[in-house]
Length: 313
Image (cartoon, rainbow, N blue to C red; front, top):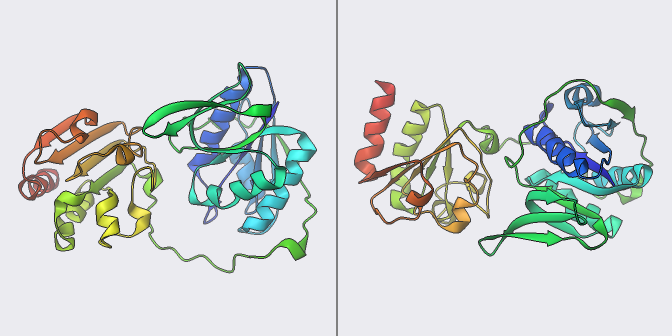
């Protein structure tokens, strides 16, 4: 059972989710001694291959298909590579980029797809653990072949050792089937929420868009990134790319500060891998306190400025 992990890059840099996928692939393959391969499509493939070479990954395949590969190109390259190396499982980061092509790749291969995985197993066939209706559920994949997207932060990044073989892969691209191409990239939010070390998240308790400056001031003081639960995003106070939770981005920062967030199951699904959770809420019975390492019960309009002042001295 060859396991293929797919790397991801953005703005000329390899993303951390790439090496995390390699760790997941190594753990899955360890159950039966299967080989692990990694693919990187487009960009500076030589540099990316060097950054992806690690112990336990047998081969890093590079496909030089432009600086930014489109959905259609990625599907063509990866489906051909799967056939070439007889891969049975393809592991893709559960990111906007991964979710763009992973379903189409599964359809091209005629394989099932399982998304947002937090655990993998191969003792009795391929098993995938994911959240379903607020509970962790383990699924057995019939036939043992699948495209699986991996929740960011669930596996630690593999350490670069330079031990992997590197192979260039020349895919046969059908240009007529490339219906969309990347003509440019516009940065909507310069901060990378999924990679942030400190996240300051705001919820319904902030009351109004005019009060967001309190959260931005605290984030600036702690060198953090501002995020939100669902309500501020639904009200248009913050853009969708800042939403954390099952319907947004999964984060795994060193510190997650939740301001005025009650803590629904959907939101907590996106923050459970944070090293330290600090909650500020006026309701002592708010579910967020069941998850928080540190809780402050009180009026956020008093507490948040006090925290900011304490940090800035």
